Image (tube, rainbow, N blue to C red; front, top):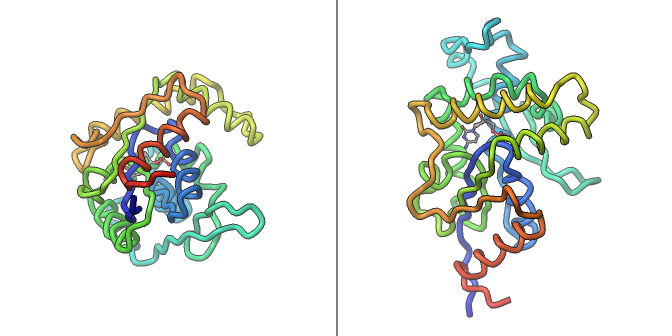
Length: 235
Ligand code: DC
């Protein structure tokens, strides 16, 4: 059987482990991997660093719109770790974009229409050559509605908060409680699913993966089997 190069869209709720499984799949099948959440996070970090976030977390939209041309987001591979890293105007921000400061405001940035339009066109350009795994919220619905393989990943809010909390603690971020993380997860779900501009929803033709009770190995296997079936690979 012949293998064809396809576009793989992985969408779903925050902290479902989408990025890790998307990265693993991309590495195994030799595809490029794009974390679109990192792009929204980088814009949020730019806003924080440039005084574009009010005390209540609202974004100075006019200010941001006038500075949009000053924001360049790129990806690179760390030679030592082999991991993909996000760069904001040439500076590696991989660590900063994952902290709670950014997590607390990123949904407010991601709901702004002009931000989405700018990032979606960059994402579409990245997928032109196919052979790509892209993860986000609107990849199967807006960015690549014709993607050959679409997956929608979900898990309970408690499972996701526990995973995110353990991750933060492992990184040495001890200034946060499990309840705060759970509230952040629930609040982001609410904003992501109810926003007017391309809200998070499952594409009609997406396969659902609920990984509340699955091991990482089981998820990876599930994804690879689906890819083999769709791309026509008889490995
Ligand atoms: O996947 P993540 O937690 O890194 O995403 C960060 C935020 O960006 C989250 O609030 C959802 C939003 N996002 C989005 O609106 N569209 C995407 N394609 C990716 C992320």
